Every structure is written in structure tokens, then in C-alpha cells.
Length: 232
View 1 (cartoon, helix red, strand yellow):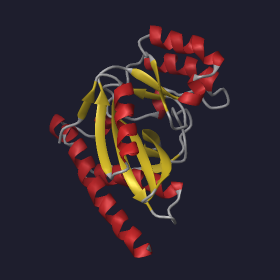
View 2 (cartoon, rainbow, N blue to C red):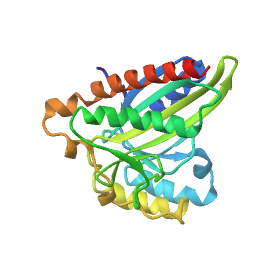
View 3 (cartoon, rainbow, N blue to C red):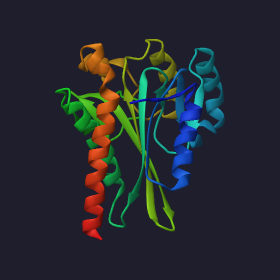
View 4 (cartoon, one colour):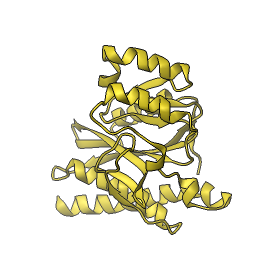
């Protein structure tokens, strides 16, 4: 299994967008070489975000934007991304999309005897009901975008998985940005998160996770297609 390497998160996000625009079923697993903080475009455009974004860049965490909503997400060597472009039937909901990507991650984890749940987690970055949690700590966050095509509805479903604990300097940078961007939300803290290297011992097992993720995605997408045809 080859992970698509990108020098920065902007390129990875752009590749996801191009796959979504192509309107064909697709799957992409990628990592960025450079650290960055990904922020929704609507937040990044605010005047009060200019100074904290400049400070984040000065501290080695430049801000890049994405089209979907949500909160602030770290990218770089610590994060593995999986994106799937999936045809969705008329009866499918956003929850079905989130359930699909969370089930993919959960199935991959079970191959390493790791059990996960979904739900919110106080002090997690980009918190939401569809976090993937292990023992109550956030391992992965999810997001999606939908659009209509002549062939039907299409979803770009994404997850960002913490493969390694981010460097400690991330947290004060993220908290400073978070206080301006999302003042009503709890501040992200390191102890609310867990990385895959804490859960899977041995380099051989750790390095085989992306392959397990692909196999789990193929299994879940096959099941999704069967259910879609049965409902038609």
C-alpha cells in the first residue's frame, strides 16, 4: 500500500477536491510532509483571524483552508488522511456518510485488537458526534461534503487519523487560534487525544495499518453498494 505523499496539506486537500469534482468513486490515503493547521474557509476569512493565523505560521504551523465546515485540525507527519468519494442514494443521510467512514476505521482497528466508539470528546480539536474514540480519547475526526450530479448524489467523506502524537508545541498554538475562532468551545488539549502508535505496538504492525484501512474501506464500500441496490 502506497500513501500519496504531499509536501503540504493544501495539495492533499486539492487532490480530494479534484476527485470529488470528477464525480467518480474514488479513495485516497495521504499524508503531508509539512505541519499545518487546517481551518474552514469561512473562519479563515474573518478579520479577527489574521493576527492569530500569522502567529501560528510564525510558530511553524501555517494555516491552510478547506471548503467543509468544522473546527481546526492539525496536518503533517502526525496525521493520516483517508478520503472516499461515494455515490449516495436518495434515502441516505449525512449520518449514513459519517457512519460509513467511522465503520471503516473501526474495522481496520479491530484487526489490531483495538476497539473504538464514536462520540464527542471534551477538549478535542474539531469536536463532534462523529469522532472516532478509543477509551474515550479522540483518535480520528471526520468531515464530509455532498453535491448533486446528473447521476445522483455524491459525497466526499474524509477522516484525519492521529498516527503519532503531535509535537507538544502544537497545543498552545492551536489554543491561541481556537480562542479567537471558536470561543464557545472547550480548548483542545493533548490529554483528550490518543495516537495510533500508542495503541499498536511494533513497527511492522504500525506500518501495516494503512493497508488494513484500505481493505476495511473496500469491504464497507462493497456492503454500501449492496444496500444501495437493495433499496433502489
